[in-house]
Image (cartoon, rainbow, N blue to C red; front, side, top):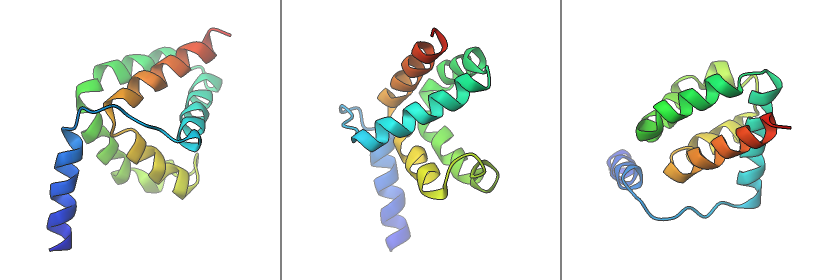
Length: 106
């Protein structure tokens, strides 16, 4: 029964359109991801990817859970889990793109 509740709550969250309220540590995590992308000179491909998968951000965040064993080399497990939850929200994609653009223009 608990698993069904998680699935139902996930679908409610996937199609929600209300505004996003992020904590300071969430914004810091987004900035860390933007720094990581810019340091590796991947700004343009990352922005193109984010723009192309914008409608699928919930599915993309779920794919992050699948790739967790590989990608936790770059973030701690807690940060990675938090990032997957944050990226489910549609407005966060815009915030991440803006951070990457701001950091790459410096």
